[in-house]
Length: 223
Image 1: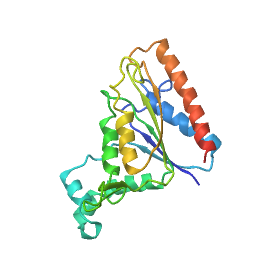
Image 2: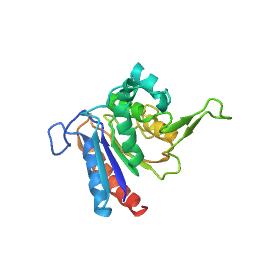
Image 3: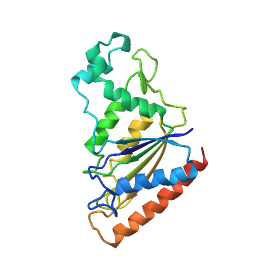
Image 4: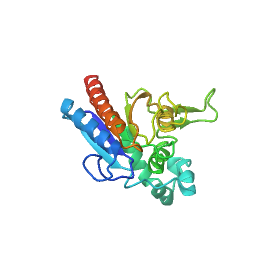
């Protein structure tokens, strides 16, 4: 059975077109999951709304606990990592990660960055040995067949080769972190023109939805 981890990171709680001031990324991520389930109805879906319920940010206690060998952690350390352990367990279980991640000020929301910081865990999602020849870091999720889909939205336009090229730090930052862990099959779709709220936004959303449907069918067929 395939397990799909569905993440939403928008600060907006609703779906555009359905709820006032609704989110484009929530609409796309919900659509992807809905389309996926039409092809793979036996999929187990794990849902986490990091936009409305963000993970705790990394603290000094968290860092100390994470870099202490598991067999040497005290109860306080284990408690500091409890939420992170849950998020890592969800990631380890997932075959497909589908994330709705809007662009906020050229990068991902702080809520989603907190999720990234909690799942990049030494000894659990990446290995580290300063005495290892060559690179002391290595991915622990490589070879597991995990795939990632990032569905984004942007206020302006031209981030994929136009006037805003080079200012998009959403997909690059998210995919860099996931690649570091070994999740290298990555796909992305985005809505643009949100700030303009005119026919260009409507067309961009329609194009993104069509691309979302095609991608869900393509990935489902490859299972």
